[in-house]
Image 1 (cartoon, protein in one colour):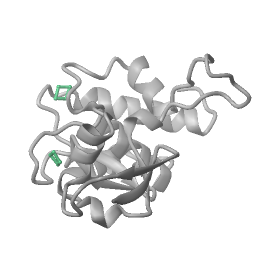
Image 2 (cartoon, rainbow, N blue to C red):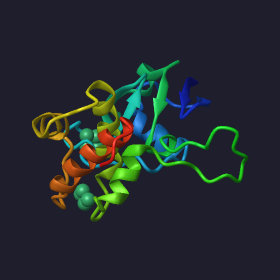
Image 3 (cartoon, protein in one colour):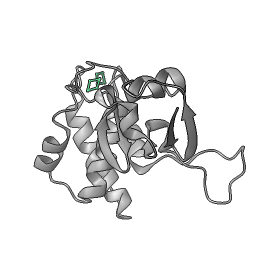
Length: 165
Ligand code: FES
Ligand code: FES
């Protein structure tokens, strides 16, 4: 049994310790927003956060995540404070910026792009274009949405600082 916290919920999963976290999330917990692209840490589609750090879940044994906090794309949007079960969720500023800039094309890479961006903005609230390119260059997008991703990162950074985009 592996114990971990996923999106704020304690989970106990029957899995071999060397099972990649990606398959625990997708196959054991039904969290299919995190995608499988390459399986060898080269594309970024499987990016999630572990204790606040962006990690490639396709090559991360779940045994290494025992007792840690995992955040996936499904956990980014939050219920408003004091909201009820039926209250609509409030999108994370990065998700909202992605919508406002119409970033996705096929969408397959975008959960990974968003999770990497959230980690980038936590470390660097005002990234330059070069910072964005450096931080996201290992998140591949076969549809070539890179210019829109860059614009959305700037938009999200402004929103998180309370500025107009
Ligand atoms: S699926 Fe993990 S980096 Fe490509
Ligand atoms: S939107 Fe299609 S791979 Fe990125």
